Image (cartoon, rainbow, N blue to C red):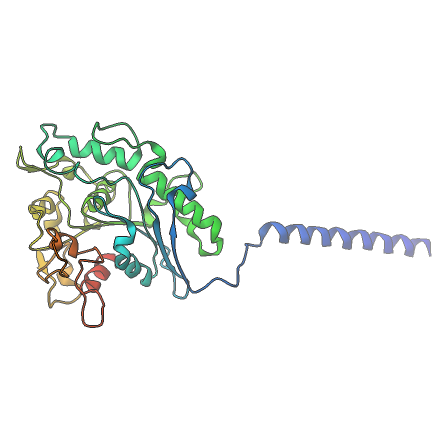
Length: 333
């Protein structure tokens, strides 16, 4: 009887130990689940909410992610043009989201004027554009024309927004875009942008192996030397054929095709007018259109803005952007 009692006691101890181990394992490994998440995440997020150290250019980021379709496990980041805000480019961001991208429009230091007449455009400093873009991207002190610290830089803002979204919506898997060492998961990220933002998107390819850059109406052109900025000719950390460019033929800021040549895009096909054409547009990297921009009274940059900005981009009778398919082409792998 004593032996039987002892055996029972041992079995009880083992059972309790296994139960405790099972409970502990469950508490530490199960991901948080929110069964009440809606099929669409569409949200404006203040940069200050993601990092209290951000203290300039604090208009909202614009976040868009469709939970009801298969995720591509790629992130598309849209960078607005000079003086613009993410809310001005919702249609492009929504297009990326409808394709399965995690996507957001990023607010960053994008002042008007410093890239144009009287500043870099007419500067005797051949590195004027380079210094501006490097300081904006990384927050290192490079240029006297702008004052961006690390917290306010593009890269830091991207990281902080991703980390914020991962904390708020852990089952959406935003965290996959930041590596365990704190670096961005560059190979999973597409940067797209308009005007100044397009230039930043391509500039980033010179330093980081991003998946793709989508360049909508950009040029850094010096009218003193009559040449594109020297940084365009720098080697890409990734590959040249990950850059796609689209502009309006009547863009008020000319010389963009010279920039395309400097980037080496002529090696991947001729310039294709997309009007009436279909994907894959001869698999080119250089695209144009002559479709008139949406009419806005007093506009002097309608063609320049039409390839990306909501208010200027032309729509069909149903309200769908005319450039929907060219955006899709540039975002398709």
